[in-house]
Image (cartoon, rainbow over all chains, first blue to last red; front, side):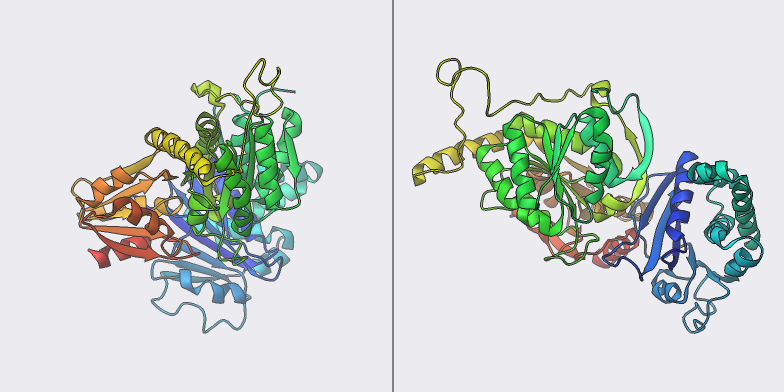
Length: 187
Length: 361
């Protein structure tokens, strides 16, 4: 039985992890695959770590949340600490290279399948634009998992942000560049 | 104005709350009464966003007592009326729902369970099972469906209106915060196109004609003077309920024939159970599942048959034994040993179920 690919995205509010999960889930659904996305939610209006749980499969998906992720992306120091519980030796662990002070909280040798620091914040700031940071992360997730083809990802972005691209076609180019750059980071 | 909300089969990808709103539209619900509470808020958001196109109505009340009683009032006026609530709101909802039981009113209530007791969490639980099946100062004269995915949430919300109006008992769809907030695929359809006929509604009050001349007077009571009078009325309700039960009861079971251990779970927890059984069977372990779809009336005979064959019943629920109480009552005297897996207010994953079964076997 081919199991669902389990993806956990965690960051600070405003970093866009929820919209990344939603766009990937939407794209997978449009491809005719099964997808399930659930955000964490609580009473705090702001200030909490935002976590998105995403699963993609070829058959109906089981429980909405899971114990261990196949890929985990942590985008802040608090996200690193909060998400320790989702990591085991089969997890590809991705975190932003700019996060400081988490040396003791990152998975040690043998505790994860792979641990990758990616300079996503820096690239989005210096090469692209800070507002496409989450799309760069989306590219990294797709690059790491291959859960959806890049064309499907771009179509889903078009669907979600098409109305903005109408007004400013450069935005489309910027977003698509961010996706490609994100995928490249995982190669 | 009265164009159909859905034509043809539409595959959609949306939250469970959105699914409920579409199901109520598709079922021809006339009006929703409600008061906001997480995690069911978006049901009323999506409902109010859609209804101007289809001539339906919404009334926001001052609390859930009022939302329940106005739903009762809508039904008395012959409207296909519904409400939605959760947690402490469900607590308040019990008084109007008791009245609906006493007067046999076909209200429909969607419950998206959150953590309890009290305000607790706005997130998720299966801790409103006792309240939803047996709440109020009565005898649980109600029907409760427990869906496990978005398709069922759609199907059973439509079905709830028909069960309610056919049998005239208050009917509930018992979801939870996970089902409310998660997104997954669902196929929306117009019930008529699938051959599902909506049971017509009927006015209780304001009927045409002169009472006593053209028709019998409407005599709807929730107050009785003597003990004997109440006793007599209740006997009739119980008889109707018992007659209805076999027609309404729904359940699913798999791999129970030769099973040493059968997992019993309902609602969203069943999703992980289904996968766990597949996994455990693939390893050659004799494990099956039984899933009540109606929690009230409960598939008692069917589960008792299973509980007399299997050595163990593992009860998995996101509550401290609320499903287990329904089960113990249903299977009293059966030979299977009960193994509890109670995780109040938190989700249960496939991995956890697999591990628990291996420990119990």
